[in-house]
Length: 203
Image (cartoon, rainbow, N blue to C red; front, side):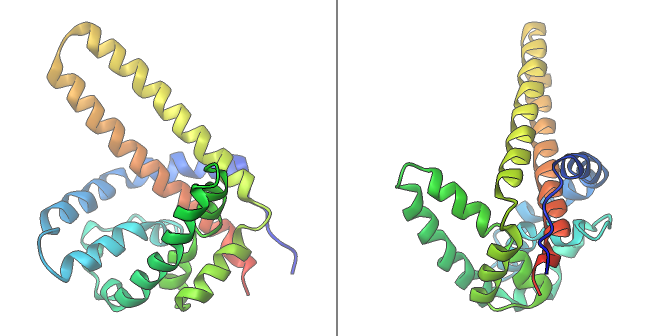
């Protein structure tokens, strides 16, 4: 099977379009997650849901904030924590070797949780699937994420500078909050686009 390569331009476009379209829903998800983070067991499911929102975003849907309470996220609780354990320690160790190997591993396994929940693969199979899906597209993934981060930082810096000169602390705080929400939305949308384009690289 010929590998599908990530489209840099399509991913950037999707990141903006999907992210802005779902920004209100993502705000709702974040608010509900914060409000219920103190509830045992429920908080595990909502946390898993927050980390795997790109699955639903990749389907072109406008997500519902209440979807983070879906029982399916708690169903995979054990597998999810096993996956986190299997990937976190190697990434941490790889980061100790001049950082770059850790970044490469993080990108390589960045889709593992999506394969776990969306395709029902076990943790080790999800890691392998993520490796296969991202093979040949790691530089494109890194490039897209860096461009989005840099663009966001420039916009945030310019806006903060303008409002800082005006001298209204409340507005500066509000703009910071809005910019952070936009960044979260766009990054989740970028992951959704990456997953949608590359998931078919896995049989």
